[in-house]
Length: 100
View 1 (cartoon, rainbow, N blue to C red):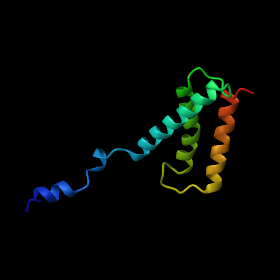
View 2 (view 1 turned 90 degrees about the vertical axis):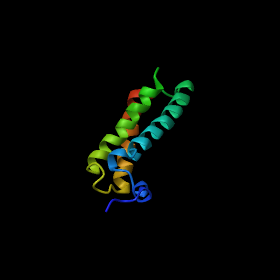
View 3 (view 1 turned 120 degrees about the vertical axis):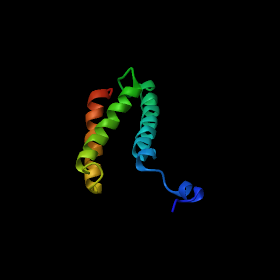
View 4 (view 1 turned 180 degrees about the vertical axis):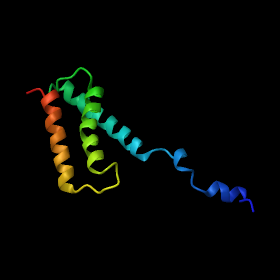
């Protein structure tokens, strides 16, 4: 028996057709980071001529260790681990881009 048109249209799209919420979240985070870093650059708090690239680097410093520790999302990461990842990323980022 073939599914009716309404039944077929009410099914969820296959995973390959669904937008990647993780990618969308990273894109939104990148946009927010870029805006913040652009303001910090203009105020003289950061040394960079390309805030978008700096935001990309910061996002990579945050997400790469998180992906590794979470085994690409298959393991929960504790709050302590999240804090450690964030602090290490910010420390490394500021050592490269900070104005001090």
